[in-house]
Length: 402
Image (cartoon, one colour):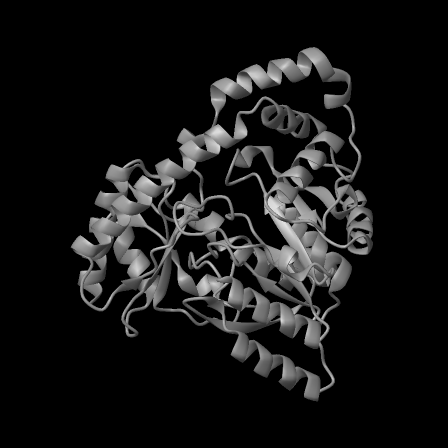
């Protein structure tokens, strides 16, 4: 090995950090510990028996193509299915030329700054926002500017103030990163009025929007909101989707919907990254849809997640001490907890581990290091009984801090 690896590392490599959440998960493998730390779908949602059948069908009927390289854009049949689904939900401004498959949405979050961001460029995100997005943008040298959220998502008034401030300095951010449907980590779903306000600001200041929507179809109640991509209809929005939360995360299938010119650049970037997403898993996913299994399994999964969320929320109301607040989302996988200001969630984490319960301290979701009195809780992975018991243990840890 060379004497000084750090001396030859690229600037991008030096900006890379291991995922805080993945590192936390290593600490939570004790069987007696209840972990609310990962953003993990429940294994109960995985359609194992149906997949056994579908895998056999693909190998029996289409093995030559399924085991071969695929087009960088993705399997044509899978793309047709996704386009048809968007159209059936009201999105008219979409065709095959507007959609490409990615190796999960995390690859999309890497490809977008790869084609848009130079070191020092500004990128706007929420306070708080998805850690995977923050990390991906930072690796390419983006300077992240956080905009506070309220109960409706990113505050458009503060966004306008920041955009105007940047304009007065002769600066313009490369894009605004939003997660409008059951935002990670807060669980907030942005209403249409706020979506339109942000779109109008993006047009006014000539800035792209990256709409990350991994949880959109994980809805238990309330009214589905139109995507920002649909509301815009003018190429101002890049929309990201994934099957990780609604099918199987191990398949690593995601997609990007955008203007044809943006897709063209993303295809070139992906060709230099992995050539193509697995042909085999794309063929399996397409056949799974064509066999009519998807909607049935999604309905079962959402019903299960609703019960798990309800069990956790009920336990929070029962056990949490006064002064603790939390979101009660209509979908997604997370609750976001706000503690009294004097409580540091990282210190609470140590006590919680002793109580055999784990979570993610909220500060990792803040690009400016704030949120020290917040934490993210996952309700989808554990059973209803474990959600209740884990909530009791967490409440006990908080009471010790208080």
